[in-house]
Image (cartoon, rainbow, N blue to C red; front, top):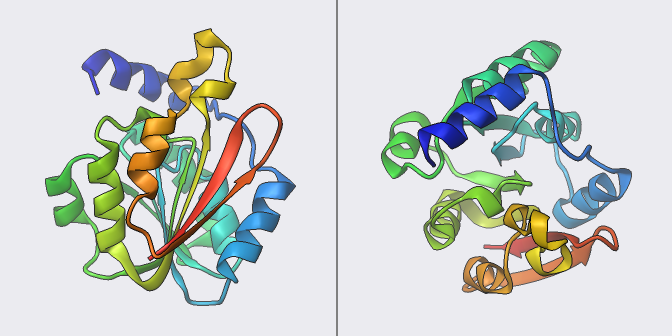
Length: 192
């Protein structure tokens, strides 16, 4: 990510701006797909303002929310301070393997989520491989993302392509997908 892109994201989160709110349908699918249980370990990558991470903590997961934007981390900590220690927040650049190795706890996660983030990752195969290594046996990766092909031309940069989907869904024990709306928002549930 370029310094200009980083500055844009920092400004976005510093202004308290979020993106598409978490829908009831998403929460319903999440509950069905992962069978929430108290004490399960969850990692929310690219937490933004923390809405999805807070929902995971509310389902009983011990949740670690990470984002590379300092403004997002600060906003999540402020908004959801009452959820500590079930929800912890950490500044982390998930695309940087050294950052991940140095900052993430030496544990495996039962659930990894990535909501509205994958399209902005430059090396999607490396991201998928890193997630796979972080999952406990039987763990689940839930990816919510727009599909580029279903978006208007001027918004396709915020979605993943069919090739991206093939890249990140390859090699999992099992996978399902769910369309969340007619506009191309899709949820992938990938089982390790």
